[in-house]
Structure formats: C-alpha cells, structure tokens
Image (cartoon, rainbow, N blue to C red; front, side, top):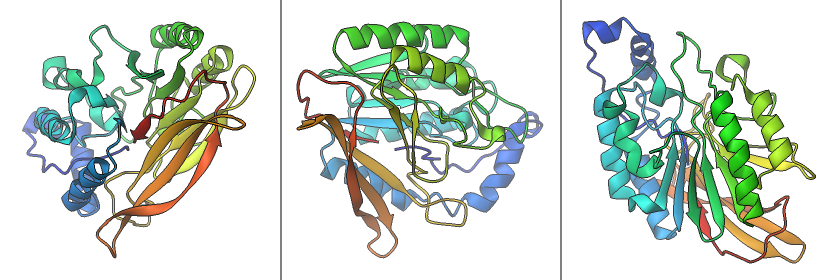
Length: 299
C-alpha cells in the first residue's frame, strides 16, 4: 500500500506557516474529505482478514511532516501488525521540510530498521526487501526525489550480494524509477542513475507509490525487463485526481514456466464500504528461483 496521508489537522506556528507546510495546509483544506479514516480502518481490517505475511508501505504516510504526525503514524502502524511484519520507506510528504531525526523518521525506526542509513534490507523466507529513501525537502510546488550517489552505490552492492545468495530482490521506494512515469515536477531526479544500477545488478521487482493511478512499467535488467508496480493512494475516495484506494496482495510462487508473482487487486468499494477483489494477474519475474517461498505480501 502507499500514500496513506493519515488524516491530521495541522495547527501551525508562525514559523511553520513561513514554510512549505503552509502550502500543504491549504491543499489539505481541499483534500481532507478525500483521505478518510473509515477507508483506513477498512484497509487495516482487510489486511488482517487476508493474513498477509508482510506489509509494505511505499511512503507518504503523513501530510505535513509535523512531529505529531510521525507520532500518530507510529501509533497507527503499531496497531496494524508487529513491527517485524511491516516495512516502510518515506515519501516526499514525510520529508516536506527538515525535521529533527528524533521527532521524525527516528520515530519510525522500528519499521524502517534504518539504523545504519539507507538502503535497508529486510529478509523474509528467501526474499530480500530492499528499501530506499528518495524523500528530501524541496522548494515549494516541487515533489521531486533523489537517492544520491552513496545510496546508489550501496544499493548496487546489496543487489549483487542478495542475488548471489539466491534471494528474490524486491526494491521499495516512493518515486517511480521508470522514465515518463510521472511529470518532471514530481520525478526522481537521479532516476537514470537508478535505472543504470538496476540494469547492471538486477532485481526481480520494484514497488513504488507517488503516482495517483495504479500502473505497471518496466526497466531494463541484466537480461530481462524488471517489472515496476505502483498503487495509488490506499486511503483516497475516487475523485478526478485519484483513481481511488487500492492495495495489492502479492504472492510469490514458482510456476511451470518460472518464478512469478500473483497480483490480486483489492479496491475500495463505495457501494460495499469495504475493500473488494477487483481482478488480478500473474506477472513473470526475471530471474529463476530455487524454491517456492509461498510468501503472501500486502502493499
């Protein structure tokens, strides 16, 4: 799941109003009715009902990067599942302005496990969940991201090591890596460098958010294309700018023709006031695996 934008009514100080947060507060006045608590409650209930093994959240959990929001998000995640069953990466709204670590991402350490910086690796039964931090403060009206040379270099080392260990490598980040997936104002600044790393080192799957529609792109791998899956906001009602709340239930399997991920689309239904099945598909992965993990993943 992605782009939860947990509802939070900001009370900004004078200093906070003289920052990018004020623009987001004005935007929230228009969008507060679109990201609903009842949808988030139904999302949590649907995840529990499907007993997913691991939950992946690809950023934008908050709206204004306020310390109170990071605390609220920590409470929401704690109620959702044990920390070892959740992996999160931050989005641009989680880094709207600089926030002291202890009041911001430090409160999410139990879910990022980023003790030694980014990227991070969470292992689950033959799967390597590799989280990247593409979030950074930007100028007003921009929502761009950047990974930086140091993070990209470490990512390449991790991808090679995890591939040599025979693990299925799933890369998580907020911003889309594929060219043309989103406009310049919201794009990943060093996406070409990330694509070059993926082309050299390989990965089996990339998951991201940030776009307002579900989409599937591919980027080049060492031999076969690497699929990139995006979900829209998992808390938004359908509206002219948002497709509406979705989450993807992913199951890794070994099919007759090789490894694949079974994708079930779970869509918020305004009629049923619940998440319902909305189709699915099998997606071939670009590298053979030694065994079926049977891992059942929600994001």
